[in-house]
Amino acid sequence: MTNLPVYKASGRRGYAVEMAGAAGDFVQSFRTHQLWVALAMNDILARYRGSMIGPFWITITTAIFVGGIGLVYSELMNVDPTAYVPWMATGIVLWQFISGMVSEGADALISSAGVIRQTAMPLPMFIWRVVLRGIINFLHQVVVIFGVAAVFGYLFKINLPMTVVGLVLVVVNVAWVALIAAIVSARFRDTQQVIASVIQLIFFLSPVLWRPQDL
Image (cartoon, rainbow, N blue to C red; front, side, top):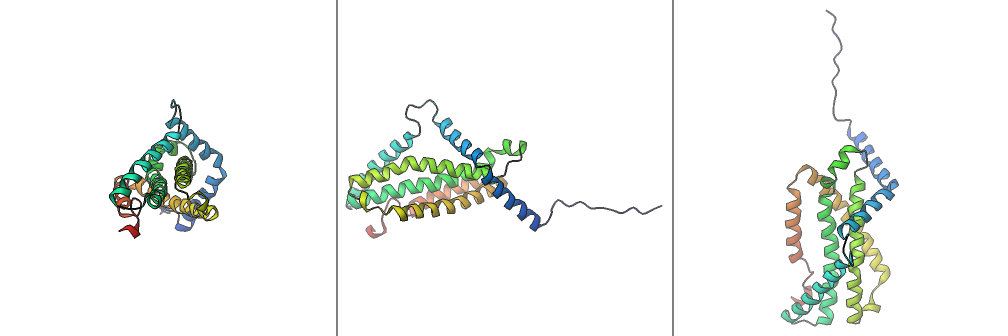
């Protein structure tokens, strides 16, 4: 009997090939930016469809929170509200921006599982969709920071160039954190609950509602 050659198929193509494929997905995701921009805009419109003022509810909710908590906490901690309220307003808006992108990023691949299975879209595209959605929400909330700065006399003391640089660095760093959270959450579904708990804990440990110099 003739001995026939035996071929063994392997599911792994090698790290070099897989890294090249991942890099190709990143490049392709930026080439298809029109798609994830449209998806992010549709997410915003769908969330507030039927509302009279739409996403500006984010602005109103943040303004009420900053006004109420800022004045109450400044009295409780016996600090000058002109220094505390702008600090707290900036911290709250940035924290909601960061925590929102990380939390929603963890669910980015899971919520889009049906689309991912049926199409060949690059996976990073779903992360950029979350990032852009977070930026749009942040732009609605940043009005509160400028409003508080105008009320307490800090409006013309804002260093806009450094502010833009800082925001770009925040977006870049939070984007890769959201990407990692999405990958890990797709494999381990309990990761979303862990992330939510950790974010809540870090919120109280971070100088958002309090200033280090007031301790």
